[in-house]
Image 1 (cartoon, rainbow, N blue to C red):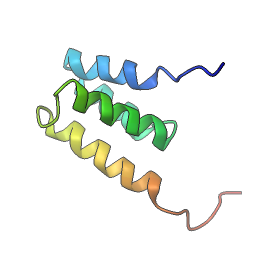
Image 2: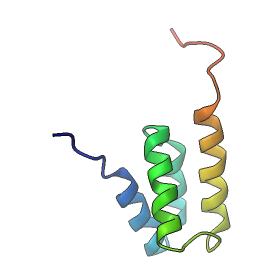
Image 3: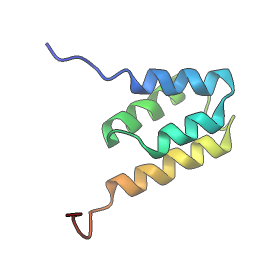
Image 4: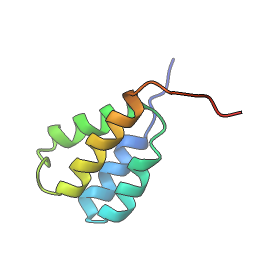
Length: 75
């Protein structure tokens, strides 16, 4: 059995509590694009899109960054 990563739920709890600075910090260090998409889906399901524009912008920016191909690999 595979376990789901609880990261999206924890970040959603931060957003709902009003601690958007901590949520944005977590979004910037998202473990994977899959987790970031899960967070975006949870926000849409909770009908919270547009409420915190800085959180929406952080999600969109980091989705673009994680989706972009890497130009080089770090040593």
